[in-house]
Length: 218
Image (cartoon, rainbow, N blue to C red; front, side, top):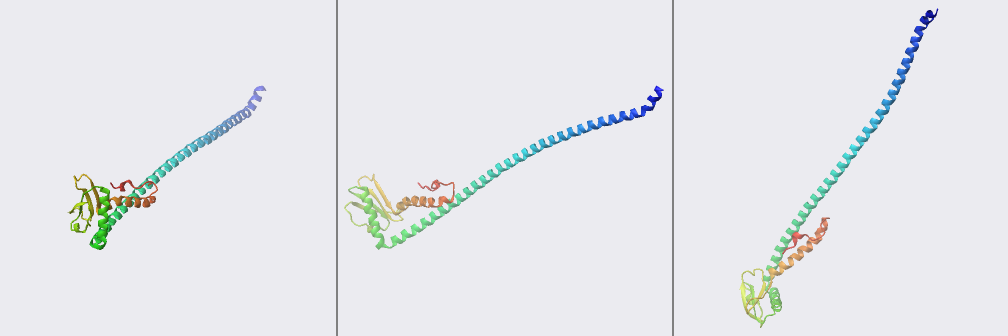
């Protein structure tokens, strides 16, 4: 009777065993699924952080490159503008040279106006030389325009004084000389005019704080 009961319960016991296995397997699968989901979420979060970090690094690198390019472009613009400013000043100075030469020639051609100027330059040079006797040099054809002065030992005409004016030399040994020629007076005035012009134009270039050193003529 006992073996018949066992035999009759065997299928049920087997089904119960199968269900127990399925339930255990299901729980394990659920646990594994939850674990994988957690691991996957953690992995995704880690990858997202890595991507965000790389994106941030790329943006930072691009920002640095952008600022570098902007700085380079700004410096290039400064150099180009500076070159243009220098060229403009040089051209203005050259035009001024031409205008001054023409005005001096016009003055010398008008004897009534030039003679008082020439003699003023001569007296000014004689006063500066402060010598008892001096040689006065003038342009060719202008020796007869100099007024008499007890300090003048003689008058010489010199081809190099093509723009007019006078050069006074100590008569005794020629060791002292006062150059009061038109050419020299203009050359002395020119650097001041160029520097003044450069000061007016320099603010166009933000990084220029001082007059252009290229324009400081000797």
